[in-house]
Image (tube, rainbow, N blue to C red):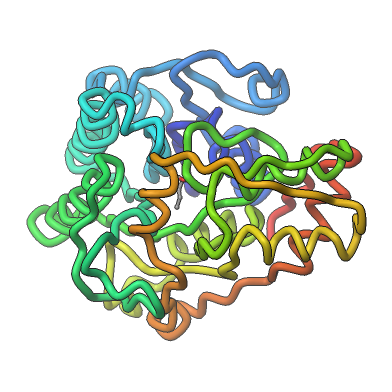
Length: 322
Ligand code: VAH
């Protein structure tokens, strides 16, 4: 029976992956690990929780051993824009933490999920229909850590037989836990402004197209990859997966279908704009669709409809097991 440990459990993805996994495998079978105690009491009350710094390999090894963990979803990390403010720390946490987790997985025989990102691409990568295998020379510390992480996870698979698997996530859109310091955060923050009837101040320029995915699809993609027959996986780290790609004005138009009075203006954040300009406009995820049957369930219209309803009523996520 699976016993799972999730690092970064209080972050945007972790805060929803933990309840999703607990609904699927059982509350006691999912250990949530955060770098600090969560504000949300439900994360503490709903199953095992521990505080640990992912750079502390001994602490991680102890948690894995004590709980009999066989699968790690390693989500802890510093996102793209925040990483540019402190690249040394971002490298220490994102790469140092991944190395510690890989060593624990190697020694204790765990499978490992690694969340890569569209950030693993950069100038020189084809930005339209970005293929599974292409040039990857990102210019952010976050992206450099992602592409290095992909290579290190593949190394641990081929050299030591560790069952490492990863996804190149697009921007994730959710309403449970706020994103922190990403370039795609605007696509989350816009909904709070729309619901509050405020003009949204968009940090990215009109015409900036980015891949995006609604959180329920991201949760399902991670679990479906980890449950896939390994014989079908012609790639390990990491698969392109996407659901939609849009510009800020396309997202604003989708919101106006439900909120006709919604208004937006632009105040460009040069750091986020430079990062966004280096990322794909739209990834090609046909290899994930072919190898393990990836299919998104949400598009721009259905995501917008649900986000406005949820942000409007701030109901807890009902991310029941699929
Ligand atoms: C970021 N939300 O903006 C993250 C993600 C693809 C974007 O990696 O940094």
